[in-house]
Length: 288
Image 1: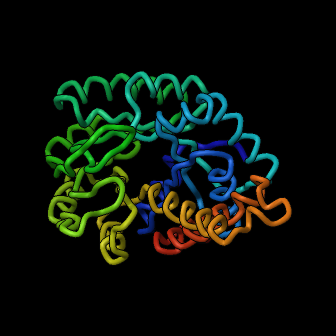
Image 2: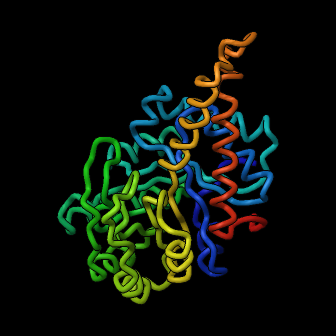
């Protein structure tokens, strides 16, 4: 299986009222765990890469080489998109050149006119290369690669202006945030989501900050047109927890327990379990 853009999988998800999971990758273990889980559950999947994670893993071409190698060696047959997450304009161009099959341009911090102009330029480039494009209106709260957002509510009229340009998918702020949700979080604003859905019609919507949103809110968001849900922090938390337990139990001191292939094993399995849990919740199992 070769990398695909996300358009077909997301249009199908929107039509059939489920969502495709976008799971951020941070290294080989993350990528392998997510791909194997998608294959085992016959689910389409989107591998997300932030600009910071791309740099950490050695560069975008390294990431593309790793993912393509795993697709072949693991005999992955489900649809897989490799997607730039919260990309700058320059980052989008670099990942397109490197071989990503999907990119996000996050122009939410620009004035709407500048967001529109830059999005229009990227639409032209991505269409020529058969790559899917995600745009954003209304900054997502929390922290992403050092950028802080307060969890804005997107203006539905601005969402329509971006959607009408012809983007593949649209991320709109509806009170969601990156990272852990605070105790005083007000929840998703479904009134704003419903208004956005009504006037963007055929464009799949994206829910960022999928970690910690109650299951009933996730399902309601899907019913209102969300077809892509981003998960990152939750995988990081279970990976850290499983790794900590392995070391606290002294297993790294037994035999060759210090071998990274053993040391990272529990975290690998924890990611697999979490990704499966999310695929079941999102309804993407057996949808490939």
